[in-house]
Image (cartoon, rainbow over all chains, first blue to last red; front, side, top):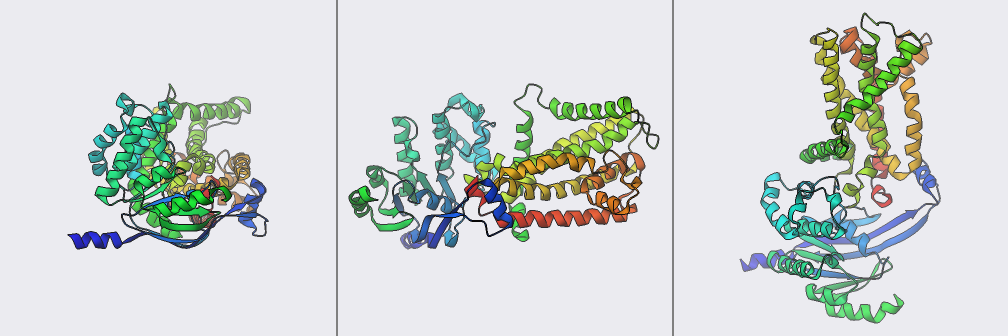
Length: 252
Length: 266
């Protein structure tokens, strides 16, 4: 039993090998359309992620620091699989649950309950599994009768609650949290933090956490990665990374 | 690329049908008359065309013994599907951007479920058309068995068209406008309002028959009015298969060229 747990902890679940992501900035939409047919169209390059390599093992909890535009979101998007690297290899194993933008990703014309099913199906769950998880999600979201109303009638706080509830209840293997813990009131926030801690400690979930608040990161994470202009400038345990980030923040 | 698109469709088949269903329900709920609009919109257009040709231009005589209205309806109902696919296809990726930019989803299946969703509506409309023919005393016969074949061919070719359009329109709105400006041309340069076989210039006739809209619309009329089997016009069928291959190549080419860039520009 013990040896199995040890082996699992050694499994690499996320691996980046020399990953570079370049966004092409065209002068306007017309140039972008022309570039489809003719490769010589001029564009500017924006290196969002520049030759980044790292690997994360199962059960690790990693915080990503960096100023806006340092490449944090692009890295998370590539892990989620919604955007592709320009060069390099990415290997991700397991169900990724991304709390990127909680209020997005809903079909606003459908009810909250229908959205639970839609999201579950899109994450590859069978109807039976979703039926089993549904009471949990409804309970966690605390929406009351609103759960059967169209999502377009929700307030932004309600949408966030539902989004969070779905993402933490579907038993993810890799959980990506992008500033999302700032949702809802204090009571709900506390509930979220408890649930995330539970996932890490009990279910051996791998966590990637993006924040500008080092104090919150210290609560969850044991490792920290600091990014600057698309490059990793520090990859160490959480205290060392926070110290580095704080010391260099002014000129980053 | 073709293989990966096909395998995505097989792996995600349940989700594709669920999304098709929700796409259809979404299109028509939220308005007070809801589903009635699916019937009202085509009826008004058919009435206007019938009025212009029969009353205005006094040209709408019976065709093969069938009233002009029935001839018109048999060709126009499939056109509405094709029009919906041509205009809806351009916006497919933009409309479902949350599937592309917020989660991992096989993007190439989006035109497919949009096409299936619109096909549900089309099947309901066809049931009404059969009813309309019944009202005029024309009972369904063995030729009606061809309807599912034409529906499937229409679905296939317009999924290809929608994939091609969706990928390019995601890159630029110019392409969307380009498509919208040419839909009218596509309609009038097809065999919906006249019989292509009566054109005397040979190359023009072949060109117009290559327009898949012509093949589909005349196919539906072959079922309801001319009573012709699909294999009795092999030349037309081969031209259509040619068009099917061309659209498939275009769709896959544009998707392969752009699928990495689409999430970044939406």
